[in-house]
Length: 358
Ligand code: NAD
Ligand code: TYD
Image 1 (tube, rainbow, N blue to C red):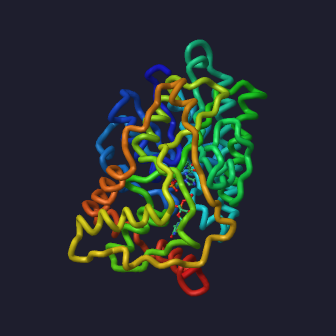
Image 2 (cartoon, rainbow, N blue to C red):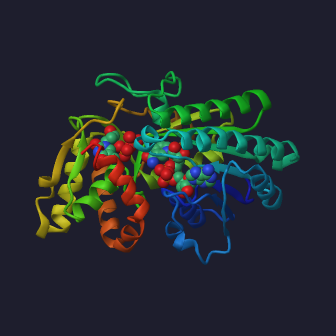
């Protein structure tokens, strides 16, 4: 890739915002950031880039073809990095329609506009263009305890509406490369954690609830396993895949940090016990609640391809990065209070309150 602008979608969300800030800190080129600002998108995540002239924020839908086509013609990006999605499994169980709209139809629209734009490029601009689609390990379904980790050739077997919508998007990206030659790359990553993650996902929810003295809801027996990756390591992997990844390829990204949910929640509590000893032990707030329907038992990623081909390695260990994450939330209570808005409370009530899991 040369030094042109990039178009990032979903850059006001958790990983997208971390990526935009990381890009501006590490690369010279401008970022056009297209985000619809759903409940999960938060301009406060981008406060550090507010005065950076290289960052252009555009509020809008990835499915708005006129808008996307106009942005591509105006900014002539060298790459599109597609993060925008509905991303929460529990929400996809309560209301799958938005997941189909944004993750499937939105990705299709973006691919169509990208194809039209790329077809009109010539020379090095055309040769250097990349469409990078950010996806998840959940497209591969669920592992049992002794199964080997997912590789890039594992069969797709999505189990939740979220996972199915991401799988559909992955298939469209694959088809656009295979049929039209669009230089697309897909990265499938394991569970992320770190700054700016919306407190509906496990780790920030546990931190925010524990600080408020509220119950820490653990689904089922708490022995479901996820493979955790610090968000900065994911951002570094995406930047590497953009620069060195081969079009048409997919790359699995994971932290080699499998933990049961109970281990994760206890680690959050242990960090809080140290940092807020007056409230210790926080683990007394743990409550086992009704399981998530269709709850995948275990995810694990085999990252050997991206390690061998692109030289990527996670730089953060789970325990130290988790502690750093807990510290970040403690240091940013203004951000926490900002996101625990009315809409968020309505969701909490639906998922955990009357008629919900608790
Ligand atoms: P998020 O929910 O925090 O953020 C999603 C962002 O997309 C928000 O800013 C939202 O406003 C925006 N958005 C939603 N619909 C849009 C639309 N129609 N048009 C434009 N913008 C829209 O999600 P995240 O956790 O940052 O995940 C980002 C991407 O990474 C997603 O594609 C997700 O599937 C993938 N992923 C996430 C994880 C994880 O652990 N969070 C792991 C692997 C892959
Ligand atoms: P989550 O953060 O929603 O990510 P995903 O479902 O995409 O892996 O959940 C991570 C794990 O934590 C998952 O096994 C479900 C579990 N979980 C709980 O036990 N309690 C909770 O309140 C939440 C949100 C998740």
